[in-house]
Length: 185
Image 1 (cartoon, rainbow, N blue to C red):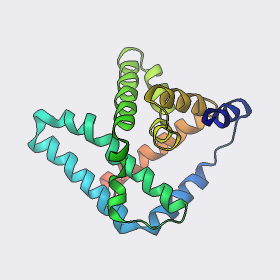
Image 2 (tube, helix red, strand yellow):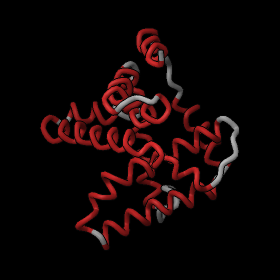
Image 3 (cartoon, one colour):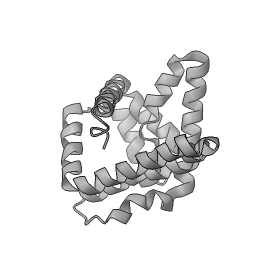
Image 4 (cartoon, rainbow, N blue to C red):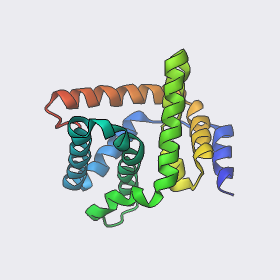
């Protein structure tokens, strides 16, 4: 039963080493920097194209394309961590999981958005809590609701550490954006 390991993790608890997460992430990036940077540039250009030229349809990118495109990073990182060969088309693998990813992406953003809109703190809690939801759908095979709930339950145990991680990632992205988008790539 795929839930039993997660249920055990939720009951037993775990530790998260943020420094190791950054070190491992950097190692994964360094294994295929051109592919990763090229794919990030592709997503950024697509997003800018929708924002500047297809403004009436920018929701199409946000709702229907962003989730599967960003899921490609997770799929490639997983292959790299297992020592498998990577080809550039592997980044588009998120589209093989289109419905679960889009459902998780859309429902998660809506719930977090409503939480921020109406009560702020619940929205922040859910934004952090849903950090693993797409991963749960991709690698755990969960439907959208179970992916959201298991992500929230697993993160809840160390919510403050994940909040800190999210803030670090936000700061790094802002710094990267200020450096002519180089850091974002």
